[in-house]
Image (cartoon, rainbow, N blue to C red; front, side):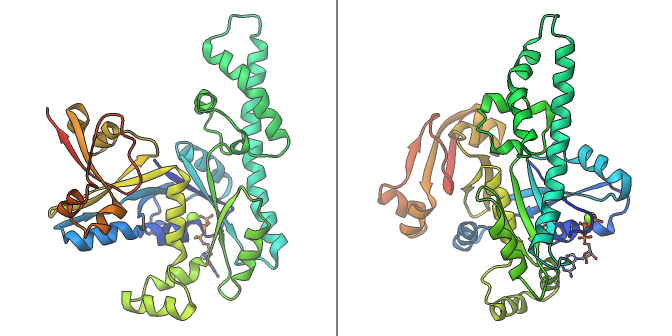
Length: 343
Ligand SMILES: Nc1nc2c(ncn2[C@@H]2O[C@H](COP(=O)(O)OP(=O)(O)OP(=O)(O)O)[C@@H](O)[C@H]2O)c(=O)[nH]1
Ligand SMILES: [Mg+2]
């Protein structure tokens, strides 16, 4: 799981990356791609940590990648380093823009480049397929020949592939292309310090299926240099309940269809990240292979039930909210789980 940060040169990609991960990307000069983990803000996790006061806390984290390359090499570096990213954060510079249409043009410029790059890949492949039309096709060739024409049509309309209603099988069939525009994308508009309305106006003009968030990276970077108490006061003075970078991380997390479940105890309270729809043994396997191999049952209580029952397992059990679940149980976001296993 990984989120790649993309954007035109000097749009604020590294600044955003640094705020989210704490890794000073711009000070690292010998790596073209810097990776860092961002803690996923989760009020439920914080509450559980408060209740258990464990020796160790381990919140959910997601990896972000920031590509440090400029000039001619930049596009190749982005392509090489981000082809494995599952989702994209597209940073758009509004802090040097005069008006909304300028921001929109910048956003479109990169989107169009990505669409064109995907279109070239599709056309190349279709051309090679047409040249070998008389030879027997491999199953991979047949899959590509069946799916690619509709992708081509979509891209020729100037539209991203993610808007096509492709089945999971079809997506799987074209996985090896690492298409840019098939991956989920979050637009982050970097707004001017003195005029957040410019970012808001741009976000309103985006089509409804595009998700976007406004942030002023400059202010939030400054905010992080203050002691925690002063950070809170500063946010209050701006009438903001939470810094925008936290919303960017949360939205990136949801972008990938991930959810978290928790394991709790005096030793450790930990949030585990799984794909939505994962069944109990698969979730157990994220904790440890042995737990999946020797899975017997999972003791499960939903977060809200747990809190409503006084924040203890005894309370949840007495209220009939602690369930024993088997191999077919689909884990829900916020489940507190204890795996029973035998190896
Ligand atoms: N005024 C203002 N300046 C910003 C903001 N965010 C970033 N900058 C500045 O813009 C410049 C570029 O920021 P970076 O974060 O390095 O941008 P980048 O997209 O990583 O740049 P490249 O990697 O060179 O493409 C830096 O000098 C930042 O300090 C902002 O919100 N407001
Ligand atoms: Mg950079």
